[in-house]
Image 1 (cartoon, rainbow, N blue to C red):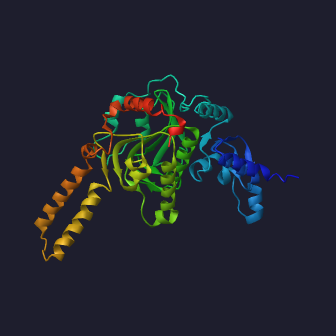
Image 2 (image 1 turned 120 degrees about the horizontal axis):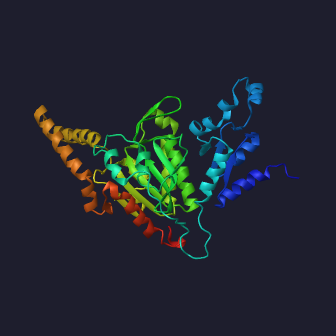
Length: 386
């Protein structure tokens, strides 16, 4: 009676009911069978496996295209180009180990009303938190590898990166901090390139990174993992190519995921926090339980250079409408004044004085502050996590 279509429907219904599903591809998934693992919440795939609607032979027969199994639907392709899989593993043994790691983060099944956050024994980070002073420069335009920053914050080797080869201007992953399981979303401040060789600006969110983060936040919400956002963001990518790729739609998905997420959220501004990037990565308006900032942090609609040019242009045009011609010397003085005023208002102390952030934190103290924050925010009952 069943034409095997029922299993697809059941797969989707289970997902809609909020029941976590994890799939591991350790062989070939072809045609209809390819949909089933992708309908799951987490998807692992081993090297040498295949995931495609039609295999190389059928593709050749149907459209005359000659393509290898790896190029058509191999693990590397789906990890770095399509973004279909979440974790690429070298072999079956590594894949099973990863499955166990992910399962260990599952929420507790407890009869008590306490929030189901399973804390374990804490472990020292791989790097000393004091190393953060050497990693991050006070200049907001500086670049650094955010994974090195995470090694100063998380327990030991607990960080497991999500879609590591896709949407690389954002780094997402699960870890433990002070024994607490958490999900982390952090801006990458190191130069990255796409698989086709295109350069992507550090600290900028593109379509692929926004879509990745939206899915990751949704998964953390389902798994009851507190979320930690490390903000050093310039905003979303602009321009013709970005608009054609759907940057507004991708950004809206991320905003929706963060807005509707019910687990505790903690935000740390480690550098710049500009424009819609501040919103999408859980800025003040998105109700993080706590929001901290490093002394070098800057918060504004846009960077000082762009804002100075914009505000100066508005000021000059206003003066010209009043019949006042601005000479070169006056223009330079106006530019300096506009920049000073703007930089004063973007200073983290300006935000702290107005209650926009909860505390200014020295970088080496960040890990201890996060542990204390997690001890507080995870005491809430599940009914109050809204």
